[in-house]
Length: 330
Image 1 (cartoon, one colour):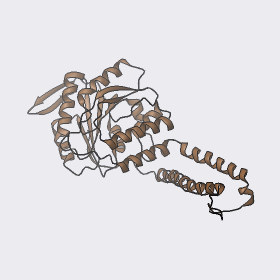
Image 2: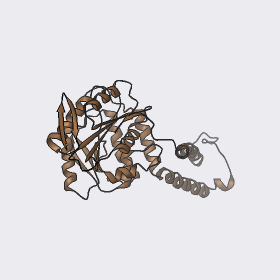
Image 3: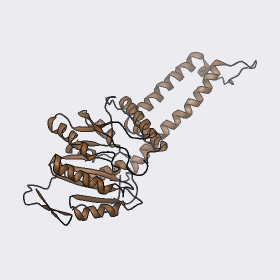
Image 4: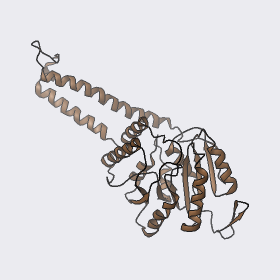
């Protein structure tokens, strides 16, 4: 395929192109990134033209931005038809935005990366070279050297690694980041998910055990602040656990069995006696103190069960993962 540059506009000569499939589809969720999109495109285009020397398409998915992000995307689209742009009707989140981009990707390999320039395009050839050498690998995930995230983001990453390794059977040494190179068949499999709030990293771990890390340099955020708050950290962690594993329910079951056995052993279950935590002499009544503790744990367990019931309700609604307001993808 030949590229012809005329007045800063890129046109593509498709006469030599044998089919409609781009070799690499780069999918980028966009949120309030008007200041970084031009540089991201420029650096990606240069890397593919000078280093990777392969065909690519750039799919930008505007996830309800409140700035001029979509206007900048339109400007890039006018200059280069390899840039596909999609605007969602509201902010659905990073993972639904990725699924939206996946649905429009034509590449044999799909790259996911952030829009804030912390994922450096110049590091992508490292991942591609390893994928070319390793037919036994389905996914390459960048592991960051010199991570530049804030404290909350770092804490969230550590908690997520612990949770996924314990609950999903993931290798605890495998880093899960949003800078990835994925074979197409896995992307097509993820598009079939009906999970209420899909998490791409978890879907990959559940779909393949042929995932490796490749170390890359991680840059500091160029503009603005990260939207990764403590509230979002807790929400994502709770959902990751309850949506992909029954471990909390099994924990509730096992502790319930222990409580029942303990009550049966002490005779409280048969006698039906109910005491206060403190006896008449003012001393702590151990069995009844245990009862008070059991009452408190029952409240926590009810909340866990409530989360699962809410997940079931949300799944039953079959709400779409995203809604497209407008797109230019032809």
